[in-house]
Image 1 (cartoon, rainbow, N blue to C red):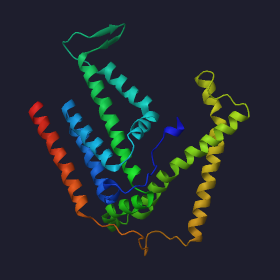
Image 2: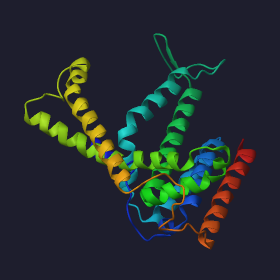
Image 3: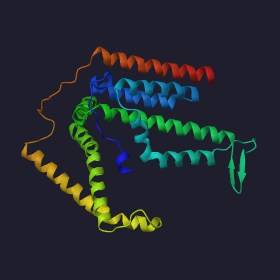
Image 4: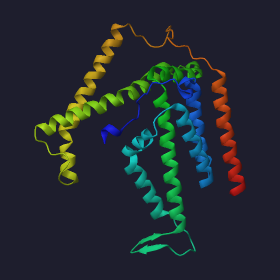
Length: 270
């Protein structure tokens, strides 16, 4: 399961999406989220899904990563769908299924499917940002977009740095967790057997070394930054200067067109 977590991983490439300005990619991701929440019917979700798949095809990222990115959060997706299925009522209508205190209505079934698809598309869309953007470039983009907040003495550079370091170390912590789990299993630890309480107790020998390793890595990173005379964002120059191109404006225009189509779809089909 841990090997299926792809959040924070970057896959280098020279595709159209890789070459886009990272600031525009963040803005476009926000627009896609807006589109997903603006969509009020399955037609709107279908249009958004087609757009997201088109972006994936243009990025050159394998479609297998889509399923791989969904696997770790599958329990949350299913739990959300079940909640909508059980608690969405339809006054005045007969339930499709009635068992004890559980009543499942047609509206609950439709709402459950709709919310499930919305969450799935949301995760797929947001994963594309880290897949096609390196952590360093992502830091520069976040800092650039939040630059106006510097006028109110907001620590923009420090916040952008912390966010990117957190993303960067997700794959590292996953790898470290796998190593610790393999080491504990080699010592005879049983982590895949027994009830819920027993499995929870079996996680303690994993969590303690993992926390120690994480703090050790944080200390090493802090020492390395101090040795390189890191003093925050003041007076720092950029290795890669962010520059918008026609491609970025075309991508923004296309995304806004999709947003307009979804809004029109809501008006026409309700």
